[in-house]
Length: 113
Length: 107
Image (cartoon, rainbow over all chains, first blue to last red; front, side):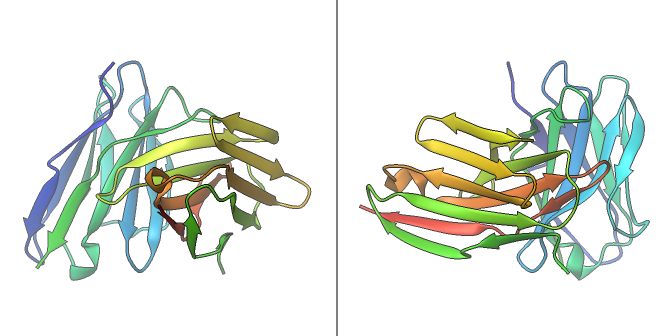
């Protein structure tokens, strides 16, 4: 069974641009969560999607948004990029929300210049 | 205020040593996760706990719900255990992460 995949793996953008990252969960998993990891703040929860609905959201500005498609694939979008958005963006999938173990993707390394 | 505190931040051990990493949290949780992150960024979920103790190979994780504390133990440590270990707690609708413990095991 294939693991969680994320595309692209690396990305360089300029301040003010927007970016879309993609996450394909493990087959059968319907919940996808997104996380941001920076050296200063560590890992932080962005949001979780289940059955195409945002279920939970962390403390991030509205520039960070996401969506989930009927095949459970998810995208996250960051608009009006800032230098501080440079980070490793990780997604993780699980069967359903709740106390099920998560499986992480390899991450997308975003650099904003 | 950090909802999850880990200690120590950095740990160096000789191969074969018994290692303990501690995690304390301040929120009500539905589950606690121990994650392992190798250089390059990939994260692997080691354990998910809501009570008691779990063991997988040389790794043991325990949780004390009353004391809001969890420990991750590595027996007979090996250089391939060198990684960052992260404690994360799940509440009803949020995840909170510790800052991680960087472990280096020297041959």
